[in-house]
Image 1: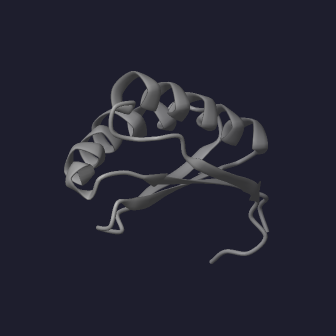
Image 2: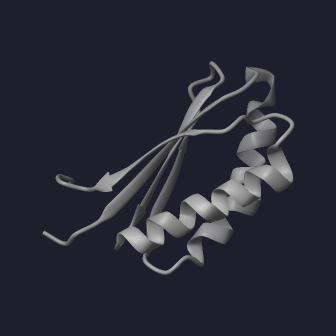
Image 3: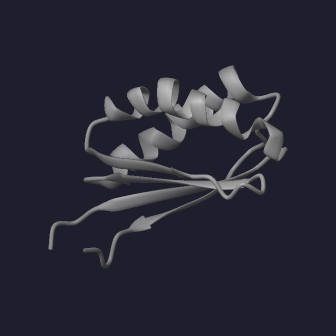
Amino acid sequence: MDSKYAVTRKYQFNPSASAEIAKHVQDGLIPLLRQTPGFVAYYWVDSAAGQDISLSVFENQSGADESVRLAGEYVKEHLATILGAPEITKGDVRAHS
C-alpha cells in the first residue's frame, strides 16, 4: 500500500457562519492547498452544528505539515473573526480503500 499522511482540523464556530466559511474553504483554501507538494485530497465536513472538521491527505508528512502552516495563515488572514484555533491531529494513514 502506498504511504499517505493525513491531517484533521476540528473547528468550533457559530453555525450561522457555516456558508461563509464553506465559501472561503472552496474558493480560497482548497486552491492554496492543491499547490502544496504531495497533495492528494481535501474534505470539509459540515456538521450543521458549528463543529466542522477538515481532512487533508498528502503523500508525505512534509506536505501535511506545510498544509497546517498554510491553513493557519489563511484562517488568520481571512476567518479569524469567526473561526478559533483548530484542534489538529496528524498521522500516517494505516488503512484506506
